[in-house]
Amino acid sequence: MLPIFIVFEGVDGSGKSTQLHLLHKYLTDKKIATYTTREPGGTPVGEKIRELLLDPAFSEMQERTEALLYVAARAQLVAQVIRPRLEQGDVVLCDRYIDSTVAYQGYGRGMNVDFLVNINKLGTGGLQPQLTILLDISPEEGLARSRQERPADRLEKESLAFYQRVRQGYLDLTKKNRSDYLVLDARLPLEELHRIICDTVGGMVGV
Ligand code: TYD
Image (cartoon, rainbow, N blue to C red; front, side, top):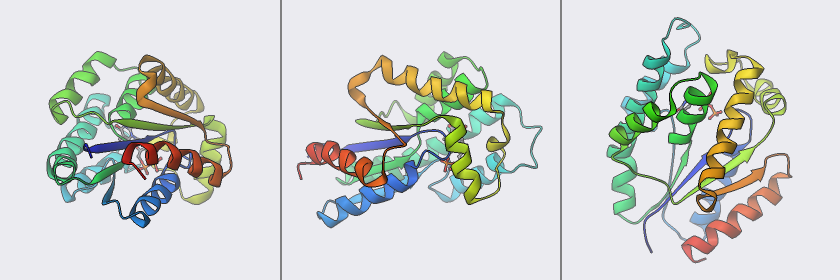
């Protein structure tokens, strides 16, 4: 089996983390070696960077600083975890990847997308997922879900308009390279989403 790297994307509260963990369980039950990680974070260095990024106290953080910190955490994760795991034959599932930077920093904050794509290439050596699963939901519904669960982090203090741009960013990305994406309506029942995801990924890993 070729190395398989699968990314979950979506606005906050889209339910992607839940679906990712259900997929992890499905694959491991089928005896497929699977490693799950998340961004920003996933390594000790990355988790420290995550604390900086999500701390609501740092309202002065500049957008370039923010973008470079996301890429720094990603560079560490790719080198320390994702590449070695893929090389040993694991299926790697990651909660967010480069598309999050394009959607949030590019579309959300209005940063130059080519600049963001370039720093990501430098940071990751060009590693791309075989499949990105986008759980699409309106920010109104997504944020309402995530705010029920815990207090807002620094990013979640952004306006609704910011999240609408983020959503549009994701949808634009999927249009450019349709075959690399599975776009799902995140309002579908949890079991139905899980079944569709298992069908698609099952076909890729041969279960
Ligand atoms: P997290 O608590 O992991 O959110 P979620 O559970 O929704 O994934 O926080 C990650 C936050 O960082 C989230 O608001 C999205 C944002 N983010 C970016 O702005 N750019 C990025 O490149 C990444 C990876 C995340």
